[in-house]
Length: 158
Image (cartoon, rainbow, N blue to C red; front, side, top):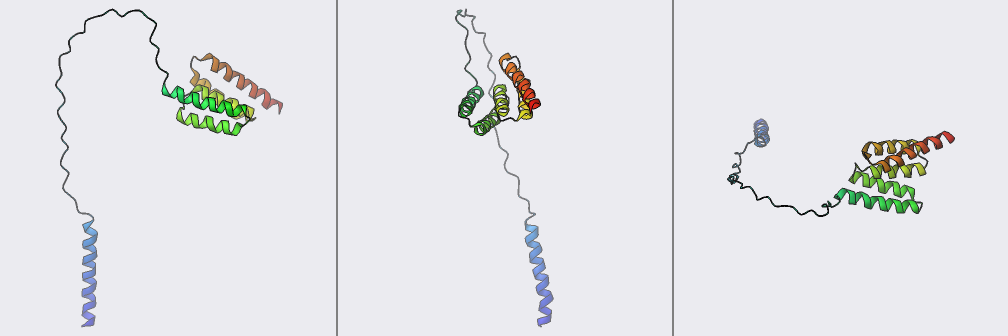
């Protein structure tokens, strides 16, 4: 009797195992669709009466948040550079560039730090990147051209 139980036990075990495996393939009924409220009905827009706008000084737009962020990183890096902590200044500027990657001023400032660290190739590359983002900002473009020329001179003098 012991011999006959063995194949039966194997078959029962196999059947139980396959039932458990196929249970994982079971599908469930779909969720109820989400109903959204109908869009509001359009109301006829009546023209607003034209009023004369008094001529005063032009409205000044508040600076964009990214400019404020860039300015904070720039100030912090400038202070670190004045203290002679060039590695820390470079790290600060790199963090700033992760936050504001299209700020030409931060790229230029990082190029200047690299120039001071005698990383001339890196300084030229960063200044060129800054030039590509500077647009019509001639102050940044002039500074970048100076960085490129200075890094070429210093690299040739080594």
